Image (cartoon, rainbow, N blue to C red; front, side, top):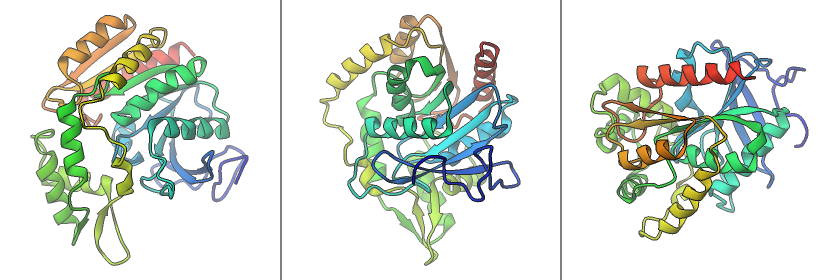
Amino acid sequence: MTGEPELSPKDETGVSGSDPAGKRDIHYQSPDGLRLYAADYGPVDAPLTVLCMHGLTRNHKDFEPLIDQLDVPARFIAVDVRGRGQSDRDPNRAYSPDVYVGDMIALLNELGIDRVALIGTSMGGLMAMIMSQVLKERISGIVLNDVGPAVNLAGLKRIADYTSGIRSFPDWTAAANAIRASQQAAFPDFGDSDWMAFAHQTCRETDQGQVVFDYDPAITENMDVSGAGWKVNFMMWRLFGKMKSIPLLTVRGEHSDILTAETANRMSRRHKNSRLVTVPNRGHAPMLSEPESVSAISSFLKMQMASV
């Protein structure tokens, strides 16, 4: 599959198959031949396109509550990174940020998008940082959600622990309860309906009626929680230093165990064209549907539109 994204039915705008909320499906091919998925929202001819990239075990649905609340006439494209959601699982297990960035470049090229703003949560933020150099002239601004050049080892170990746990549940209530048990410290004010919504964002129901996490378990195989990541952190700080020409918004959860307050403040000092917003009562990572997140991202994107 080459050329235009595979859409059903296909039209001249490059998007179709809308649902009642205005969501359109995009299917495209990765450089190594996988069939990947992205969801498309908002006017196709908007002056600003925003590419939304999720965290390690998540998918495009993470961004729908944010998009629904933003009063910004932009086009939003939220991806399912390979191995997640509606994108193919990779038989070669090529699950690493550099490969994911190659997939994002393929998507943007397929759609003919020359200029884009990026929103990246956790892993998606690391992808955005890499893209800031690979596609420097095409990036108008970046939102980093609870991630930076230095990733706290304690948080990585926590993520490794919960991603290696039980993956199959008898029903949605059991799935929601399991997610609550592993994530409650990050979202202490969540109620039953919030945890159920969380489950529906991150899981799927099989033909046998089981509820399972919607990602390939192999995506965590390359995680380094040995303590040797300081070399990577050093390289990422160098990369971050090269982002100074790109407007930056950093969103941090007040109780994050991935992006420490020390790292976030250091980022602000080093990047003069940046803003740091702390979301109260949140750990890793803010949902971005919180009022503080929506307000900050809305203002940031409107500034991007004004400069188009």
